[in-house]
Image (cartoon, rainbow, N blue to C red; front, side, top):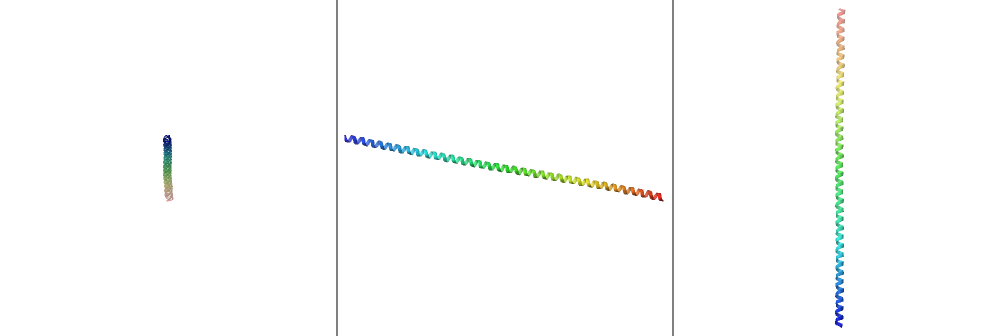
Length: 129
């Protein structure tokens, strides 16, 4: 009887030990699951960081592209201004040429008047002779 009780007690003790071992195994599994979840969270954080960096690089590229576009527009405006200045200079040159032509015409007119005066003087001289 005592040996039977002792055997039963020993069996209960072994069963309690097996149950404690199963509980320790369940706890280790829960810890492994928590670690997997922490790893998934770290991966999500790394992905958010990569996405943030991609966005930052994209904004930098967009900013650089916009700056290049603004610089191109400034250069086009400078080119247009240079062309306008060249056109103004051509117009000033045309005006100077017109003024020289008017001066030549005035000089020819004065020369015709002098010629006419000389002719008149010669005619007057002949008439007085």
